[in-house]
Length: 145
View 1 (cartoon, rainbow, N blue to C red):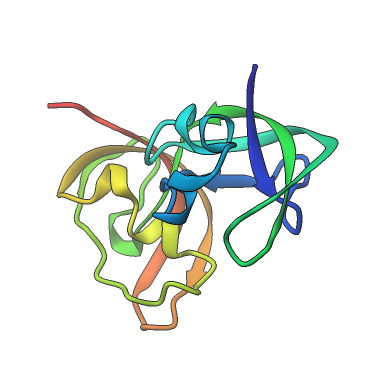
View 2 (cartoon, helix red, strand yellow):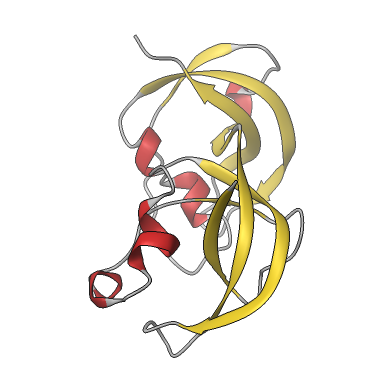
């Protein structure tokens, strides 16, 4: 069982996210160990239980709730023309500065910041990219060379 803190606004069972680490502000927080440090950078997780315990967040005065999470296949954005189930392909970094986009973490994943070999498992959905890239969101696993 892995516990973490998730922003109350999105903390719902089945919610999936890619852990991209914390901020400088997080380093000052007494909850750093539970919230950030036990999750693997760049890996994807799914909430399997939302608990009632709430904690303040130093970032934007947000409210975090304790959630039980499980590690799942990575969720990343890939170019649509490179999508095919069970395909092993090279995923190149996606150039993006749209940090408020709901797909930003999937496009600029820390785990996939360099050209990486990936095995596509299945398509999750198409992405409507504000920069005009033709992208799809997929479940994938990084292939270590």
